Image 1 (spheres, rainbow, N blue to C red):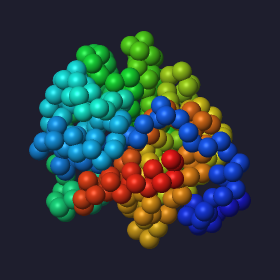
Image 2 (spheres, rainbow, N blue to C red):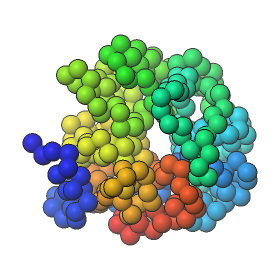
Image 3 (cartoon, rainbow, N blue to C red):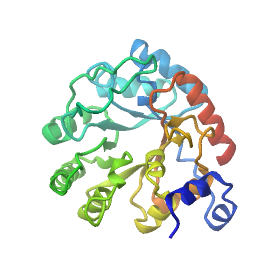
Image 4 (tube, rainbow, N blue to C red):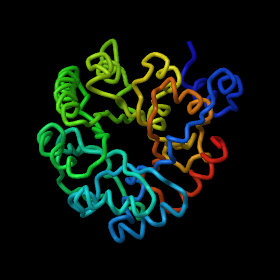
Length: 302
């Protein structure tokens, strides 16, 4: 069995064999997307101006997320969708917390690009506000609703999360929405004889829950995305395309880290991928980061 160090090294090397063995990425429907959490430190100061620059850089598909303002960056869904459309882009998905935010008192505070602790605004969450979220997004919102994460530190927490996700998935399906679950690296850590991620995949059905694979966090955990696609084909309808610095194992612009995305994108059809979004958590210069990342993707995909 390949160990984690060997696997990470293989990802950084040119993946000629994998690229030749799998179908090429060539679908005009999969527009270059951006997860707007990348712009967390700048977007709320001028939402339209920021998104106009995003469109100018070349992004055409957006995933909204938590921001410093209520609603969707201070707007109702239909108004945000209209503005995005005026700028020549689409709004295909939205992130919501799985439950109330839990702050680990022992963990170091999360910092913004200026090195200051992030201050989080209270927001609706999937566990406590499921139908309120669905009703809110019905007013012009996107088709895909993404659970940003669920508690998974114990078997009991995972079982509770599975129950919540199945219930939420049923409600979303009735409303014409597709529910997906986003990951970080900790969902892949051993829990008993399995992992929280495996438990959730096996405890839910594709009809109730799709997956949004955050490739950067998965690779940090030692997971081979292509192997995951092959084990659960068609399940990974959304991707976060995130690169990782080899030494610090922190997010960096695409092409500046350790991940070769060519063999991963070559298996987009196996994954069932419909939308992908560039994401870089707390970049020092968000616009420079998303420009570098888009140049990399265009180089390897077009």
